[in-house]
Image (cartoon, rainbow, N blue to C red):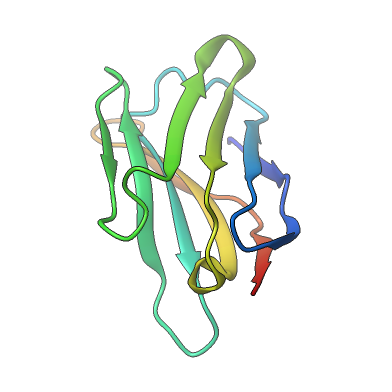
Length: 118
């Protein structure tokens, strides 16, 4: 069982930066995919960024060029660096770890609030 513990959210003005961290209680090196999702009030949860075991990254169009996802397998941690934040980035952010196949899993962090003021 892997637990994902998030940190780093908060309140920031538009144009500012935040870094979210997601620390796993166990090894994430076996995860096929780590990702960040977000859910704004009244909206569905959406994928923000993902990174595969091989380091391939993918971003939502709305954050590409502003957000950077990275993973440190040695520290069992995945990060989301968020720059040039906009009010529409306001949401609860969740990290996710997925392993497919035998022994597969799909774990979620507890969520962290990010609020961007205009």
